[in-house]
Image (cartoon, rainbow, N blue to C red; front, side, top):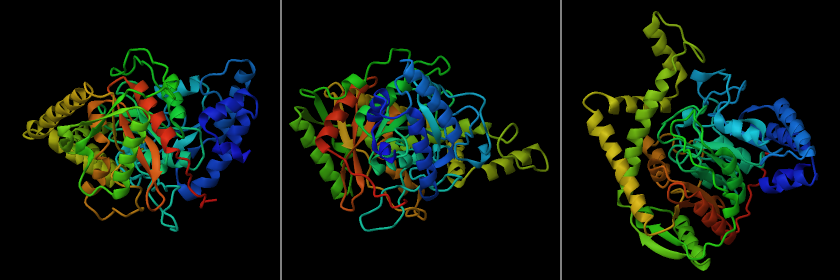
Length: 493
């Protein structure tokens, strides 16, 4: 049964439908594989074998009755930011240690309603604050990929690194992530996966631990573009519990995969050609342009002049919202509590012990920019820049149907490689991805090639708000042209 691990989600669902194997067999195989890889990759915080087998048995019963849902019997891994009822949901932070919610997040409930099987919770940067998955209270996640001829451990990207690492190692048919500044697309690029950030509001944020509420986007990791469309379809939909949830119907994005892109206008923004871009990434970007041109697309040079201000604006808005969202964690009702001499001292000691260094840094940054005397100079100005960035996209999408850019400024780097660098160097990993979060428009990363060291690289497709159909259509065309089939060597086996 171990060969079922190499199947795509669509292939596994077809196999279940044809009774080539049972959902219980899939669950048992995936649980065993997850337990085998976790000591080496540290990608799971919880592996719930009993629940997986129970849910899979229920799936088998529904399949037998002809009542299968869209994801019936498929084992999925869930980022530790999503509340799963009765399962530790800690955002990989000591301050939430041992917290077991009595409720289910809207997105995971939608997945279970469609028959998905819960495999476990995945490791992540603490409170989703990081670009390398090195800030987790559970320790860093290891990328299953390695440079050719090297045994150096690499980061999987962050913050959703555990979800990406588990899927890239073949231990699930999909996984959930959240993308606040690139935390799905960047790990997807680092691990040779498809990563999708839908339009803001497509997927409910209810029951997901908040980082920056106006920037947080739930979305999936998948092995293929078709798989990503299936997962996005299942995760999306209006939720009255989330005031920012989009009330419109969810289109059939699965049908968009494989449709012709002939006649589409693809924009190439000049601002994404940054100084010091590695030659491998520049070549792949140019190759991507050629692939889409060969598929019948018209290539158009466009300008997004406010792009250079996106990262500074993001690192004002996101910490400001984080400082507000994280104010609720005080050790009084759940999680870690450190007793002090009085209530104020208890609060201080609890938060000092519970939050890691990166979270503390961002909370302090956010508190500073929201403080009297600085609010107008920083936060209000950043919101004005945000509006200008959205106007850039709106203007571009009057000329083109989609934008094509690199996903990341580099391939995966070594664990600890940037430990002694300025935090700014780590933040620059999000330079190509943050704009889509600021504007709230859909974006995806598609694996398109390997660099000179044999590491995966991704290309990013961005479309106008609510036009995921075009994004999936262009993504599938790129996937077909790239023919990316490379897999990491199973050095952990």
